[in-house]
Image (cartoon, rainbow, N blue to C red; front, side, top):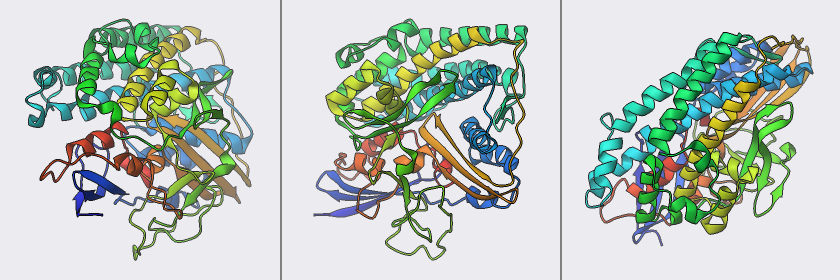
Length: 477
């Protein structure tokens, strides 16, 4: 029985606005309700615009994952035009997109997630001094190292994308900039510098060694670098038992190339099965939205200004065949079949430990992919072909942002955008309940979280929330 309620929010070090209503029984969260309180309405802004305007407008949904939005919009337009990028255009897009995702991952780890462990609450722990020296907000040495390495990595976007954020370099038929041999050499140098940061600071060992981990025991025994410091904390605080998610993992497939995506597409719920886009439905029962539940191809965005009950969020509730799915770096690695990710699922499912370890694993694997992709760039090749936008048509753009599965559904009528629906990763993870009463992924993960005596902003709740790395501004666009 609920004994009291807590309203927690806004959250610091979370991109955008988030509010949680927690029902507390004893010293545990009995139920959680996630509210995305900021409505922005990009889907409405796009209606009536020229289809190509999506390439300009949708990246502005977010300032930290704008390339993911750009890539999804370009793929939706490519499908409507019946074109695809050239092989080298696809390779350049992979590099551009992966650089942004990699930058997001290290920013989350060093600047958003780890500073929580430098709090005075943990002053008695034997690792607290090391965390404070490395991760204390604005003062820790890892923050400065991360920002410097991130800036060096982002030089690649200057060479290939012209600018960041909100590049227009990614187009339906490829990319606008054909890199020169000199550009290729400079990209390789930037990646070499970033590898030095990873091996000196984050992993304290060769990138290949962390990417090659295959068991939970090997992971927990990793003692090098800041990854080792996190794992020491995880063992001490039991982060492998905290924040257990719904147990269903979704990936749209990351970094599409001529041979398919670099990280596989699919759904894992104990076994791998294909992802069927027709199974996606947006449930509106607990969202401040008017209309009917629908597949995003037929969906609409009509805000309910009365904010009528039982709704409690602007966020819709996307469901896959009527079921809740978690998405993100850990889900990507599970679907892709990496032995460590599958071992973490078998050991305890999606937890705070799993999500952060999955993100670190993806950092290592993405660095290796970027190095390989750069070696195979052909500066003399064609990087873009032109397509013609039809007066009538539709297209879908499915990509993987740093935080998980991102989809754009486009419909064109009389040469204008007649329908545009977006489901962002945090829409999946921070959705409200659906008509069956199923909680969204973070709501499910928060059930059972410990609450200390008198805690008004439970620290365990913050660890769980931040382990998802939410981007709330994307959630309701």
